[in-house]
Length: 233
Ligand SMILES: NC(=O)c1ccc[n+]([C@@H]2O[C@H](COP(=O)([O-])OP(=O)(O)OC[C@H]3O[C@@H](n4cnc5c(N)ncnc54)[C@H](OP(=O)(O)O)[C@@H]3O)[C@@H](O)[C@H]2O)c1
Image 1 (cartoon, rainbow, N blue to C red):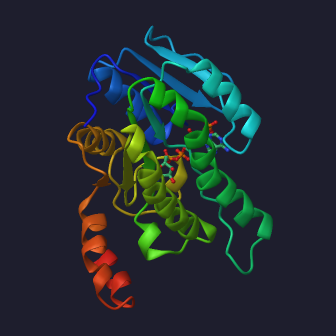
Image 2: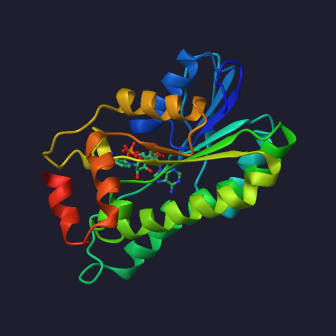
């Protein structure tokens, strides 16, 4: 159970989308400092926000960032990518990049920040997955989020001795650039951010950010062909 007030947090991909809403929510709850990253330099006028350049595909970039954010206590692995490329007809490089960002990116961050969190009392990692971790689809994206989910669960086991809370977040559509071309009902980034930070502060290890996601999780013990129906019903 990690309370946000007076803590130092990291949000990867905090310039826009869900990441920006997480930065806002953390400040709202009294975070002392929030490191917010983007792939290119940017400015945030709020005194508690420290912006940083980060490319999660690069071990050097991640290591350099961890050397700066040595006071971090809560790390949100939010940065992610959805490339419009089918697994078979699309370019294999797109599938590789998707896994490099969505799976190995959070793992690089976890490897770099685990000692930082240990030194600062344990803290928490919060990792963004998707309802597609279970439903699959969207090219390599669903597969990458399934892998990310499992990585999160394994990290929870490895980080238990140092008292680090590891939270996995599953969400359906959120109204961000990532899915701007898709015409479906979407949750707003602020409402998802509230659910995530509520879960973190309540000591949960899994956050289901919306009703569709909760229905899909509940249907996992049934036949796999029922899952699509569950998601759309
Ligand atoms: N939107 C949805 O419907 C939805 C649903 C479920 C889960 N999610 C997950 O929620 C998270 C946030 O997504 P979003 O909807 O806010 O997406 P978004 O609007 O497309 O933003 C993606 C964020 O990830 C950062 N990013 C992308 N590639 C990166 C890389 N290689 N290195 C470092 N940062 C990188 C971007 O930083 P820049 O500012 O540098 O571009 C940006 O801040 C993702 O993990 C996504 O998979 C989204």
